[in-house]
Image (cartoon, rainbow, N blue to C red; front, side):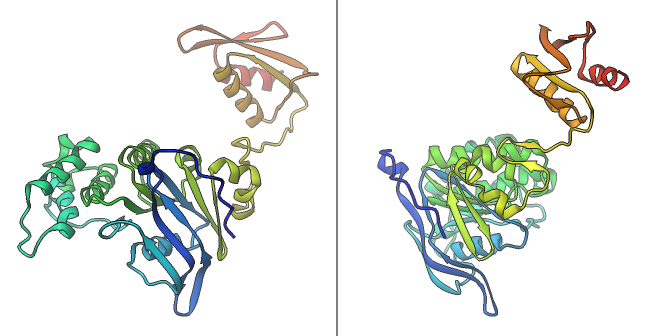
Length: 328
């Protein structure tokens, strides 16, 4: 069942407009229902991440919302002109097509029978290129750009369509961390600045928790929705993903304290936090009181620190500290 919605805040009307709504929607195939009785809403100005275990039906829902696949039962209503823009995971095989030419395809739903590109179409194309900062590669062929750049270009094609609903199916798949983060932050900005409802199916749990306004979380045939933080605190993520050895509430891996030394750490927040992380990873119990050893981290200069131990020793790196503790 869906989490009940709290009262909507008094934001500008254009930022809170209902763009997508489902009623008693069941999705899947003739011989198998993947998810049942979905009652979902997506508003303009909001970035939604749709998550769940592999094989749960993320792509099926995106295709159904887009009208590419028929629902088993129920309704999908979109409050917009034209069709939603969709970015799928299928890799583009466009030969020698350029970046600008692929983005131009986003205007085809607006063209008349003669496929003539009007000034308004040119403006939409160039606007998409500018928003995504693709000017330097706009005339390069698709075979000459990276996978991360190609994903941005496909999003650009969706933007050129000028719809207020954008649906994406795993747009960050197979990208490195830097590109994944860039795309998630960019989609959040597009939702807010462009007053669009953006729904992205993803398996990027860490990035979704940091960037999404709302998460749709699927487990079995049911789906719960809410703010990322509420779903963490309610235990919904733990229940659905059955996280092994990872504490989602703290964002840390659960380590076993198998060394007979209790350690406390004080000092500058960032290096002290990473010092605690290293000690816990190495099997030490990090405590606030009753420690066998106390470590104080001080910053000597930019990115240079000293680790002072209560037994009188000092170290200039976490690695040196860990090695000394192992020899103790």
